[in-house]
Length: 588
Image (cartoon, rainbow, N blue to C red; front, side, top):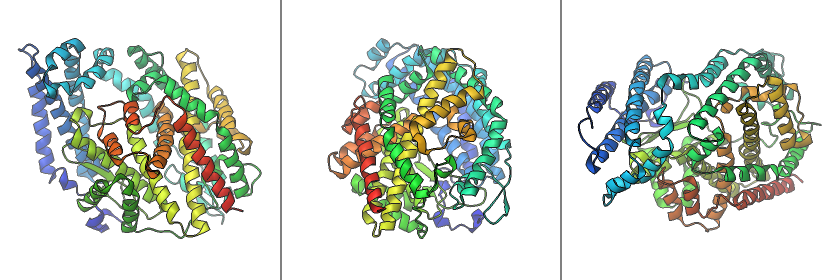
């Protein structure tokens, strides 16, 4: 792999768009420290008035915006090259300053939360600039109890289980395995997935077993960490006067328990579609039963493709046509101004992500190697970036951070429109089969698999929130039954697979999984409506501009989707069934 100096500047993110040099970063660091000192004297000797309230809100936003820029620079500088000692130092300083910033922001919000909704209504009457923050004060009122009980030390304790799980993962070593030629190869979290796509089934199984042996060995430790994490979150839910942590998560996403239960029950009622797909997969692989280690391997491999970044961008641009010219122009601006760090280099953070800096623009880090998945990653991250761009232009800083589920929806919408474009451009049966199988596997992963995870979390949280103590074997029994229910008889649920939950870090980010389920289903349904011309482009862009100024449910209404109805779920599953039927016909 190349070192960063060997990468052409044309593929590098222009970090000078944030700060021209490290010296400018240092000046801003000192300036933020001065701002925090200034905060201590704000509002001490004056009664609350419309002007003083607006000034305090604007001051809070100023601290947030400037720290975001400072932190974003240090994060990106470090992630493009982890061996950069200067970047490490800047990140350490950013994290130290964050503690001071967080304390100040919490104190400001505590002060703002003392203003009742009635008082806010009176103070903001006839002042559009202040009226804009009505939703913010509504959210603040619902978080008042938590703000009053905020304690930095307590927060560290709440985060400890997840941090300790991460540290444990970093220290894990796994048993070496042999490849198809008898060579000894090492297994790690960084290369494990590559082995799951190996043509040799023995290598796939050995890599999975190697990982699971270590995780099972630490089963009691991981179970205790997970139980502690769930208990901490139940405490937070109680502070918010919620019956469960799930209710708290859903409220923060702007949806309710009825919508969630409707989602999961509809997926569970349609697992027969997954059962049929698993039977097809079993036939495709030529095996009696599918092991979990087979789930990511497909004989429909399109191995002859290798896109240049320019080709990938041309494909992406064409798939963006449904959003209109303005969307494509913004994409070209992103490329021209170099908001994307494109290629992998030694020491660069793996994967891909988007970081938004309100006072500058969103930035994307990815590791493009020319595979089809990289094109999907490109449109996904660009989806996040352009949504941030629209939101930054339309909303004040307070509403610029949209919910995870809204962000995932628009990014996955890009992926589904890309699939439709590639599917239409396929010229051979091999290409058609490849793209169809790829899409069906993504549906399986995003919808059925993540729905099973959500189901699992509901059961686990319910038991632990009721005060029951669980051991690894108890949890594994729950997991095993769900695997059988969702995947059917084609999947072999062996001892190692029963404990697969041990290696899933997402269970420490409780109830994140349902966002993938809902986001993907919605993206499938909305993509079809866009292709059929049933949703005006201006409605789509209006949804992208919303940020957190509206609830997720309200944004979906703009796109003519009713989350209380099952229709968007059933429509997406019907599309899955149609595409699966096409794949079966191509295989005849």
